[in-house]
Image 1 (cartoon, rainbow, N blue to C red):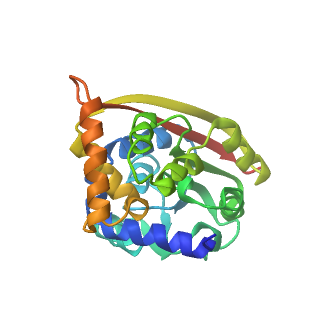
Image 2 (image 1 turned 90 degrees about the horizontal axis):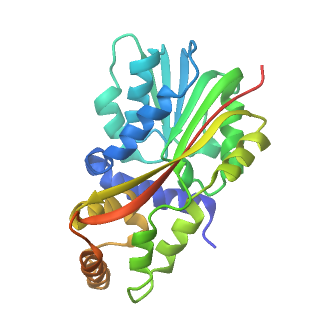
Length: 269
């Protein structure tokens, strides 16, 4: 079994390679982060922590609603932090600090944040119980955490396709089983971390898109699992996947379900 640090480094490296293409490929994630931020209870959130901050769109949504005084973005991907810095590194009136680190080794002071957000990163954490505890530890008493991640039950159409293409990509199939979480599991993470859940809910969307757009999204968010398309074996596998997706597409293109899991919780005062 790979070490936790090697897993983190693999994920970080993959996202660094696709960071410049990320925002264009995941507009639904950006909209999801905006809805998550709108679900955060009203309050004064001067010190904000963005865990797995990526290119900064969750932070942007927080700034738009709450205008915090200080934001700390944490992400293990250098490429993602570079994109964040280019967009949000110099905002008048807001002190922005970026840290390259994983969630379990964040070099942040305990009980120092009013609000922590983690948008579309939590499902990549190999130790989710520990991740919740690390986030809770960083919160001040009374502080709030808001999480958005991939939910159980989504992407079944794509999973059916890749299960029918040989050689079987067991790593990719297994990633869905390991990444997709449900409401009781998220509640367990939060409660075990000493947090009081405020609201946990799922959102199901049926999306229609082109095969090309879907595969570009997969390349951007999961290239580290799928493999290097410049390698002949990977290119052949991807070609078979796309062919089967076109066979199964209808008049509205490639259709698939996507599940998002939202959660908000508070650290007891």
